[in-house]
Image (cartoon, rainbow over all chains, first blue to last red; front, side):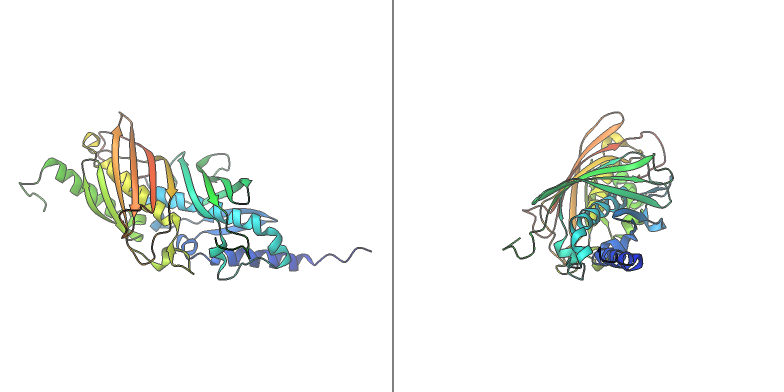
Length: 169
Length: 156
């Protein structure tokens, strides 16, 4: 006899709570106003428009630095989320106040600005192309009105945190 | 200083560009200040701020905020280049290397050099420091668009 599956609401609440705690652990994510939509394990980062994100008032266009930061946040949260998925499912992952200390550290990040960011909400999805014990490579795509018309993309390399219990960082 | 007869053309260009950049909403919100801006070189600062922290346990500023400072400083250097008079610019690409965490509580200062311009592209390298000027916190290399001869100055 197979055990009864968990009620769907219990699973959803556990995953949403784990994600919300990861995001809340980083003050800068709240400053930019970035939030994450989740479908199963698929995340979409959302940066709602606000006037403080403008870099060119004449066009107007989003600030390149705000766009770069948005993509970097999308990459780090996706990488953390995908590597901690098992731990979130079992309840063993650190998604508490110290979660930021166990997030991957950016080594380098290259942003390709394809067109100017409009004064509207922006969306981003990241894909972990390689995730090793020590290093990871992540690609991010960002769009606004049309999913097929990217306004920015980026690739970054990240240093993975030492596994819990390992000596040193 | 408007109308100062001793101000050179380069100083006038630098003053206008500085006023323009300090009026950019996102740069203002991050507390950025242009310290030096002349001849394709820009020095800009961003004070430590609790809102910009990436890891509350250490108080280290998030890489994304450092990216915004590097991008703004690099774009400003383009606008102040002697061959880019009255131009607009937008970032084409920006590669950022993060060498070490910035020391919490210290202002981050970025120094950009627009080292080459073509008819339509500007090339820039930039470094960011905290109080330790011997060891950069981060470095960036970027390519920027160059739109000459328009009155509209802007940053994409």
